[in-house]
Amino acid sequence: MNEVRVFRVTGKIVKPNLKTTFKKEVRALKPEDAKEKIFMELGSKHRAKRFQIKIFNIQEVPPEEIEDPLIKKLTLKEETDV
Image 1 (tube, rainbow, N blue to C red):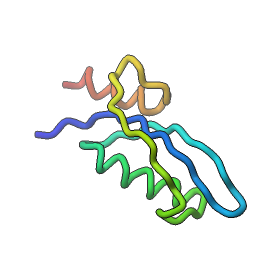
Image 2 (image 1 turned 30 degrees about the horizontal axis):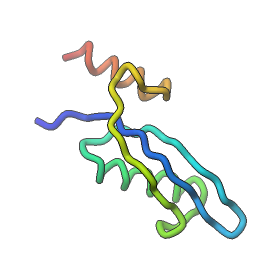
Image 3 (image 1 turned 90 degrees about the vertical axis):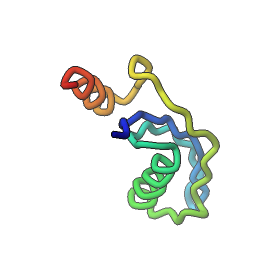
Image 4 (image 1 turned 90 degrees about the horizontal axis):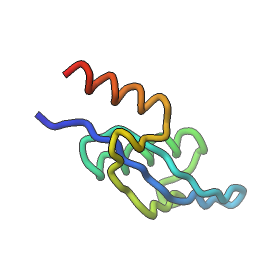
């Protein structure tokens, strides 16, 4: 069975009226899934098309280095349940 991991994705949104960088943590099985999740979440929240979202880096994050409180809680709860 595949294990859910946490990935930190950094990048930039470039729209005519919005230029901003982002750093977001997501739970996914593999880096490609994390990338898709970022496209879905940021596209929905900022009404950005995929070509307007530039992803610079996707790296796996160990549980003790997770910054997002919700993701950390989910990950730590999952580890104690096993």
